[in-house]
Image (cartoon, rainbow, N blue to C red; front, side):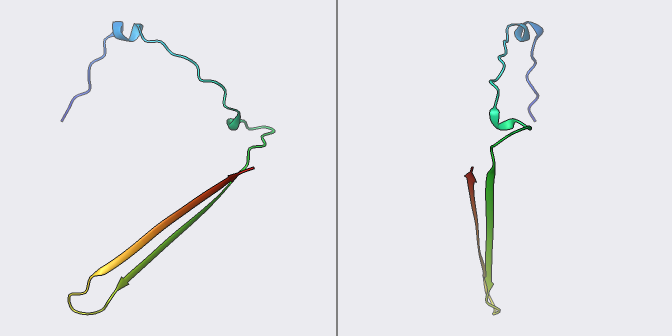
Length: 68
């Protein structure tokens, strides 16, 4: 199992950070961003009841979204 690398204080001192720009989609008051999300899951399985039968299954997922 690997151990985590050791980070020294002098390596951390040279690191810089920047603030991210404000995201208007994350507002909580007077927001007009509305998204409708529709999800559909379908699964079908077939198993023939006989000796040495095998089971086959098919599963699909469909997602769509519309932003108003």
